[in-house]
Image 1 (cartoon, rainbow, N blue to C red):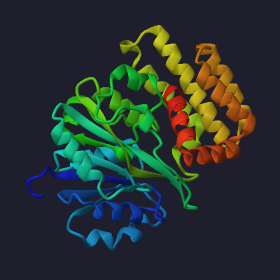
Image 2: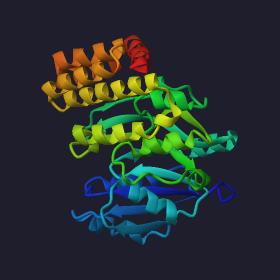
Image 3: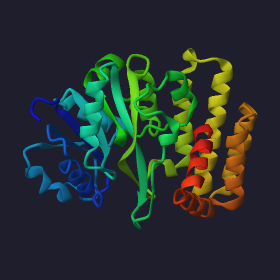
Image 4: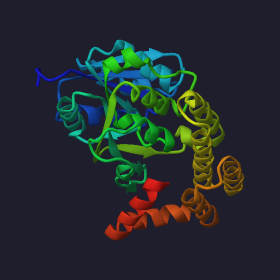
Length: 321
């Protein structure tokens, strides 16, 4: 494996002492072993360092402690310190499947024009329940994702699933530290202007769902995502801008439903309609969720996931959502 590229794995963490060990173990269990691990502690105050103490004795792990500055600043510090030609990201509350790095490195080597590769993922809860293959309907495996498509959709590329050639950051810059939430989507949009982005349809990562996820804070997500969209105005038409802002409000209406705030969800749907009223399918889906509520729709979602034909129909609908 020493002839294979060195992968710098950047694990970012902030006050997740109960989860960080799982993340590190999932990297140590990788079938691809030419890697270094950089744990970037973004100013944790919950004893995360104490949990990490035994891990830090290993030769291929470096611990970087910094003042709290958000996920962008943590990833940027990791990028600065990374020695590898490839950089992989892992949020410290998430987990990788054992063959993730091997499959993605092989795919990057076989697609030299690609600068970045991502994968599908599953979500899971501390209770043990999970939803499989969240996003494979959003892209075609190993086919380049175009800028126009990436911009027009809600972000379907999660940092925990991504490997980037380090030269991409030299060309495109690093994560925007002024953004919290859509900083990854903003980064992918800059990369896709210069390099191909491809995806693997297999779910190679597990994304943990819990109450401290930033996406639970709807007002903060909405504000930051709107700023990220505004950064793209010079590349798009006024109509495409209006469509994208409308979709943003519908996405946050969806989040509000799952957070148990139906009144906020309804107001966000109205706001979205004021920008572009013809996103019929997303509007219908969100309104149905508003009526049924987050818990019932999640129960239905899990039931659909277990039925092959319903799952296929769901993927067709979700791709247009």
